[in-house]
Length: 367
Ligand SMILES: NC(=O)c1ccc[n+]([C@@H]2O[C@H](COP(=O)([O-])OP(=O)(O)OC[C@H]3O[C@@H](n4cnc5c(N)ncnc54)[C@H](O)[C@@H]3O)[C@@H](O)[C@H]2O)c1
Image (cartoon, rainbow, N blue to C red; front, side, top):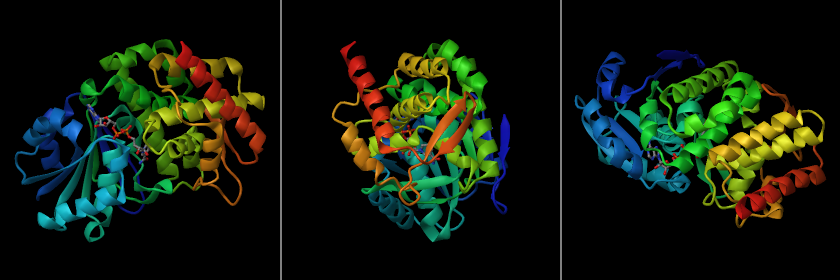
């Protein structure tokens, strides 16, 4: 299946989504005029499992490979510098293509490196996690982290195209799949009540890699994300709704040094905190909030919060880069499929939401 995503100026791109697509990617590359040398940026897990299939698809090209250590800590200025050295040492020029082959970490890192080398090389994204196939590969945001804040150094850079092959998820560890449910469920709450209901009915099918269900879930998320970023690529309005669960999610990641929680797990806890705020304010039905909890619990997305504390998260919130002046913004549901942005929540209420998730985390860990 081929889906277009309109972008600014002439930088629109297409998403090719199909089971087993990587095995048949050679003709896709040819048809899209990917010709010169290709520079693959991947991580050690992904390349060990799927590098052979990628190499077969790239057999008409001169291929250079750079591998990161798996995990968030590779999304750094240090990796970005090393990728530039790899490009330079292997003779990358303006006709070269950078291929991101991995999850959201690799997509963000390789895209940022491609956007900054020689004022921008062609970039192709092959996402390999649920989170990156359903969310992060689309929308042109690329970045690396700074010790002071996540995604602080980055840009908007559109890929030539995105090749999404859900069969690659068959090797994804359960914890990573469950983390992806965090971002997927976000689309249900902000824009797609049917997706929310489907996940409530059978999130277990997704966790057991049911092919039909996986494809449908990814496609629904992709469609919503495209609709949002086509209207507001630069995040001046509608795109802000994609931050549902991210205000507290980012603070949790920050407070735990980007090591303890996967991004999707932090978002899952952040969505529960935002859901609690919405219910506390009488904006969202508690029965829907209970369903949100049930889906995340059954998927296994609620990883223990162990060493983090509500006070530590509050400190991290003070450094939120999306603050406007002193105001923190929260995306809160008013019904399933519809959210609003609220900017005047007192600290005591935020603390209430944090206490709710920390209590839940400690009772989960006792069971
Ligand atoms: N650019 C955006 O719009 C956007 C949106 C959401 C999230 N993000 C970013 O995405 C990142 C998180 O991405 P992620 O959850 O994909 O994490 P990730 O890239 O770290 O991948 C998670 C783990 O899964 C492994 N893995 C990946 N694909 C695999 C496969 N097919 N089989 C086996 N193992 C595999 C990786 O080696 C890694 O250990 C965060 O940095 C977040 O900030 C970006």
